[in-house]
Amino acid sequence: MIKYNCFYCNKDWALHDLMIEISELNVSTLYLNKDQTHRGRCIVSFNRHVTELYQLSKEELHSFMEDIAHTSQILNEVFHPDKINYAIYGDIVSHLHVHIVPKSRKSSEWGDAFINSPDNKHYLNEENYTKIINIIRKRLN
Ligand SMILES: [Zn+2]
Image: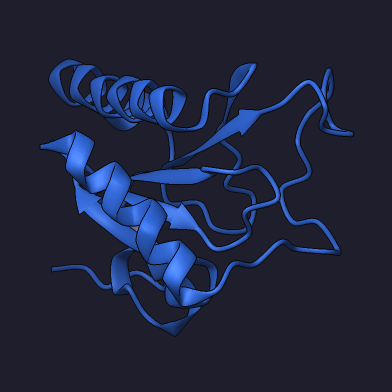
């Protein structure tokens, strides 16, 4: 197996610094972003090291989109955002992953792109991360 210098592949401290694993999905893994500036913000990471959507087979692409849609539906039910934003960047960490960001009209970023890494991150305590993760896990089953 090829070893990439990639925290989504290595699942090392750099990943655990930013996010907490919620669950394996069909072709991806769902993480809760530790920065909860936007409540319910998650990441869906494809389970193989590819960097672009066009590198997926038709079936993989379909399953990946289903994972994203299913996740966003759950986030909508749990957090009742006014809109969900989806972002694929990867300039620095190129492994294919999608930011799923529930947005509120009251947010200062409403009507604009969310700030990926804000200066003042909104961290929760372990108990509240666990609470959110358990609510999402329950709906995944
Ligand atoms: Zn990777």
